[in-house]
Image 1 (cartoon, rainbow, N blue to C red):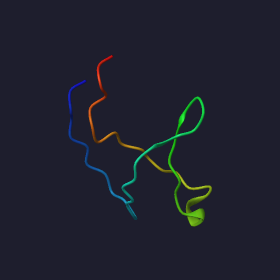
Image 2: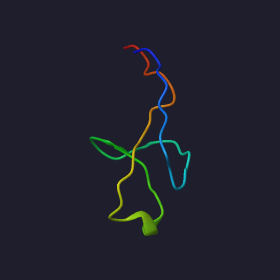
Image 3: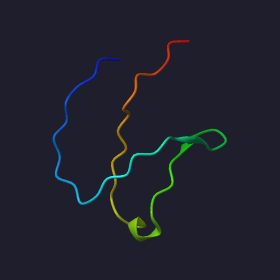
Length: 49
């Protein structure tokens, strides 16, 4: 996977680590963001298995 550049207009940012959520990953955001569109961006390369 090669990194690429993305330019977007945003209203706020939060940087967090994804936690294990059973069969998926989970990121908690403020309750005020409920019902809003968000975008999750992978900032580190995936480890090759």
